[in-house]
Image (tube, rainbow, N blue to C red):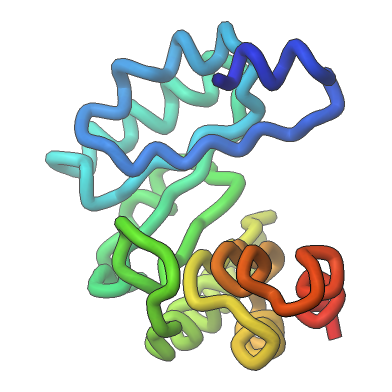
Length: 172
């Protein structure tokens, strides 16, 4: 799928979120297919060393690297990893992975604030993404907390007017 999309345009930014076990097996083929960034799931890693090795492999294959955390994972849990490898993005899941339409979990706001503070304190250029439960009410909250990127699915696809109108509402 990545290769087919890359064939359409070199300008498409393909940010791939691997919410899978053993993500390392996909890195080389994603790089060869034209992916720009790979975000892997922290909880899929067996240990810190495995996560460090995967992040370095993603980067050595010419892609940006991101880390995604589930709602139950705290910022303190990932700080040793953030201090070991330079990440481009941290994706804070505001819902449990697996299906759309879930309610936004407000504990994501505190994680965004903590990660923004960590990045500022360490003088790190780190993009913060919030994924799940994003709608016209939660978008302003996560942006105020320090998020740079919002991932909205259900709100946009079920918008009563259009995806474009829904996107405009998220930016207000």
